[in-house]
Length: 482
Image 1 (tube, one colour):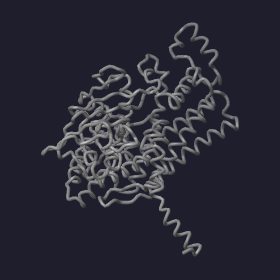
Image 2 (cartoon, rainbow, N blue to C red):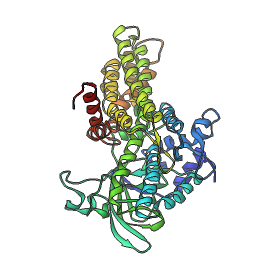
Image 3 (cartoon, rainbow, N blue to C red):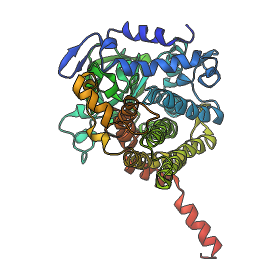
């Protein structure tokens, strides 16, 4: 079918007829819902960027799988240049939208599944790899959005999946059938789920012998029978439903998080890519996590770019942009942000080819990248809050501007640098508020901490990948210690 345009994507999502529980009510016309529409526009941007002559070369790439030009968000990386361009593309998307654009998880899942299924077939004589190639070729040719689903509810964290009081607290295969499987469970924190055509389900941790039902990887359409969606709340999210969009902060785009329940969902065999192979569940988890931790080197620096720009602008509007301590704070923000980006580029350029043919990032540096992301955006937010001032938490509502009395006082007493209008100063303050404490903070700060795994997960992988024993041996040899 070729590359879609943004409006074609929006029509295709609407045709799925997805429904969800939103703010305590059953919502049926999701594309027109005030909370959902901004998130869909952010995804639509990734389609339009592939059509734009200025960005086409970054967003479009020839697929080795379908032998056609595809959107890079569905590409299987064929070189370290592909890995680098992925990060560059993510940073560009973010600086243009100021939010999460929701297509990275499916891209990262596909690349991890591609190499894992190949190796699983080599060992177990399964045919998962050919199944996945057929499936992903269709995704590329139809230019579809895929949501990667990994995070299970997990229940009691001290217990394994098989030990839980409710076996569905880790998504599992409930029933084996000759023609497919029945899955049951849930996936949490699903970014952009209601803006996707398909779902790639993966295990959430390394499974052990006896936990075969939980070692499952498969694909289902988002409108499959038995799937239920519950929309996640975000700070200040209902501002999107108000008349005055100035208070939203980001007036056009937005993010989305969804609890997704799989209530006895049928999956045909051709869409099953792991069925009980516990020895490859951990391989898949680690590869996906590394790809996604690389992604944060692009997608979090872009929001950082927006926050830095807004902070520098509010400094001008407040009349403090010449102060040395303000400049020091902005330089520190730039330093932290570019350090994250440097790690994203570094783990890409030092990636290696897998036996399946696609390229995997450097796992050690990808985890270093994400560990930085769990810290640096919080410091960026602190510095932005410092520079912006207390109005971030006390500014009157935009609706008050329409009141003859209140509006007059707001215009008078919230003015600062006379080169800028009061209302424009309010817009910038609301944008900063959105990124550090509002709805945007979910996709920036909370996602920086917990997306692609919390800090402990990166520390485990860094310790595992750092070759400590080899370093010890080098020191012993240097010092002639036997």
